[in-house]
Length: 435
Image (tube, rainbow, N blue to C red):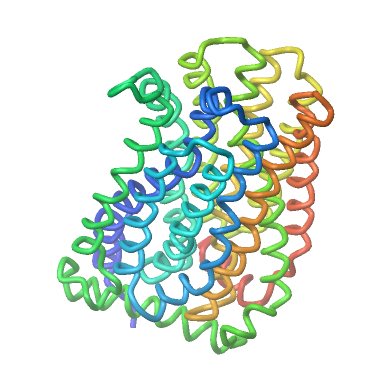
């Protein structure tokens, strides 16, 4: 039976308007609390006497804690409650984010970052799984893009806001401390709001008319049956699936590049320009403005064509070129900033296509476990990238030396994505999405 096109359009529009703006806001807060250390470092490293290696290790250790709860978190979203799990995550990470404002030693800094990662673990992959409860495969790249637009926007607004907060000295406390404290509080507040706002499944949504609820439930059930008829996987089997392993390794290379770039961008711009912290935070927003546009266009293109793999691989190749040329042009400020913008096109444009790949051949708990594994393994790159950049900067005494390593990581990710085999199920879904 074919659904009334009006009902389908209304359902898609209502679900998007209800869910996506709120998830978008949550991701802005999440990413801001994760990367505000890059702006705080402009003053914090000098105030506490941290070397580049100490800062790089502390910035990256976030991802060791993050690694530990990824798979359990995604399964809890699928089997228990996205609403309760996400609320728990937000409240605990808000507390951990505030604690960063009270560190005095390198050890305290390491522990604060580790606890922040441990607290936030499961948020991002949990949301990716949650989106599969509400959006068909044909619409999922746009939904992922809408959600993940929060990442570049957090960087766009994070720079100027951080610049303002770093200038305050209330109660004799340095601005970089207030930066952590004040940017951590919204997560706690929104964690409480989440308990009352998020709906776990369409059949529980009192705000969704019955005809629209029936349509989305029917569509998602049809999608689930199609995947299971093709080649059903249990959670344990999904974790050993060759494509899942390739995606995890590729994501490791991607995240290495992304966070190596994000965490060190303000510091590199500071050395490049010699400008004040306020100017540096403003300039740092420019590449993320470009990345925002790239992400939206890539999500639209990926859903329009139904193609995911090449959208991801080409973006990572672009990022690799941008990172390499930023090293080549490191003595020419204008060209280096242009290459930072090229890099941002790649490290944000890949997102919608990449995170639609696991759900193109997996469903249910298997998809949840796979997303958790990919994100947990991949995010170890968030430790490696910042640390290697700091280490190479100290050893070689060349600020941009780490860009070569990040470029190679992005290139390796592109090759791995291209190597993925396209299954019959994926080809069928791509054809349907393109119609």
